[in-house]
Image 1 (cartoon, rainbow, N blue to C red):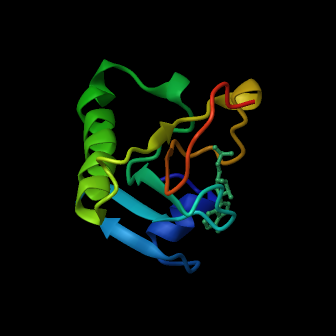
Image 2 (cartoon, rainbow, N blue to C red):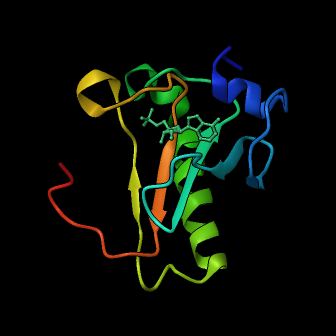
Length: 114
Ligand code: AMP
């Protein structure tokens, strides 16, 4: 686990509203939500950015996405729809360097995102 804010959340060193956890993934509500539902899905095994992912991480990244989609179904908004976002580095708007997937739902999303 990396020593980031999110590593501290995984280790329960700082509080978070955790909504899902399995052996490899943790999900918690974003502290600054951009939609009625805004949850961050993170791998327990820290990768700083999407650029740091290799073929060896393909299964982990698949599990991250599938954990989010499964949770969306369980919460009942999958059919209405949602958005999954992974920001990468400066131009992608990444601010926490522990790979995470934003799951946004509960309102109409727009494109382009800006
Ligand atoms: P990103 O800009 O893609 O790196 O996303 C980082 C996200 O982490 C932002 O949406 C922040 O609002 C969120 N965030 C920062 N600190 C916390 C925290 N302590 N608990 C939950 N979410 C956080």
